[in-house]
Image 1 (cartoon, rainbow, N blue to C red):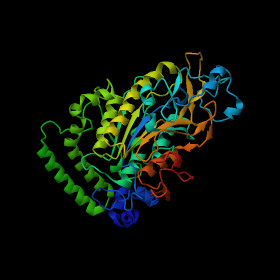
Image 2: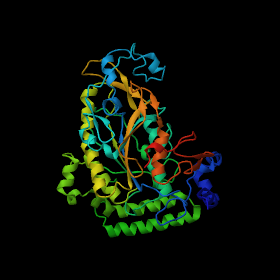
Image 3: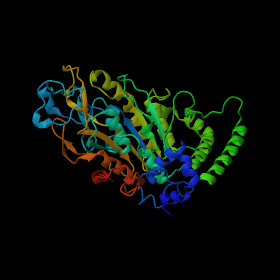
Image 4: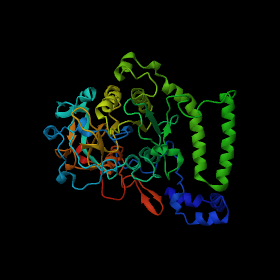
Length: 487
């Protein structure tokens, strides 16, 4: 049976007026809501998920998404543009800029001087992939990567841009990618969440952009599909430990009694969120054992710890988070996302960008190598990238050794590796200024469609009825998986 249809059948008159909460006026307003705004009840399954998913045989079972929040500078890391050196401090040609949208941070500049990258590039791997000296560890593994240089987006400011790439829409309120996967495919581990998020520390620019838990929220999907934040300080998960004086047996009896009350309420009003609460209480109880074991790195070999670098045993660092990501997917957590902030280099790029790269370079290499040698890369997809790129022109003061760059949504670089992805390739081309795409554009909806495809999902068929529309992660425009990078 269709989950939405079943949900409608379960909504009782008492539940309808209970949702009104404030009397007949609010109840009347509630009657105007499209029925899709109310969360659908899933048909119970051993591991959850929707009937008929995956749509076809998946290459990937799990995803690790390494999100570089702030907009990494593609021409200082990946998109080598040697012709720019001769154009130092020359104005960006109007024929290149084409009156494209600018942020308010540079729209008032009287000129747009070209700032060539000060970093040296070399070719690596079988495909001769150009990589900056800022990424010496990543350069060693380019034969495992598909480097995509032509990612693009319409969003030009941080919050709408990161919301767009994480949820498929620039306005808040939509489910995140991890929530869609949890909803569609269910869980492969009954003792840990389907979707885990970590926010790593960083060493670059300290006044980094804020991020919000709605970036890993469930939106209009049932709340049990939202991401669980794994913290580095205190309890790894909020309220995981029992209060002082409360034993595990006492907690178990309390939950049993609470579940009986919730079940009775559900039988009376058929609110599907009640079932989510029951499931989350039970998950929290099981996590009291599973999470401490997950966080205990004492059983990791010395060689593994050394592989991830000196910061791996500092809680909250990107290195520590990357190792935990491997431990999570090893335990069959479906979707793991690490947010690494501080990539917003409007000024002092030569001072801050090397620090950011140092934070992530060796841990990214270690993660891929670790997954590979454990046989996990065969069915785990790894994605690295931010919400947009940076401009070739300088924001503010320009010298040969000091410059900054503004936001640039027209082209930026990400890489993907692992299950379903063709290794050792470079996809797409940008112009000599790393300003416009000249071959094989990849919209962020295409990228998300590719991720879903690797997991056996036809992005057009993973939908949810909301406000009278069949909503999907990849929007209503014509987008699809990037066939040129699929294995």
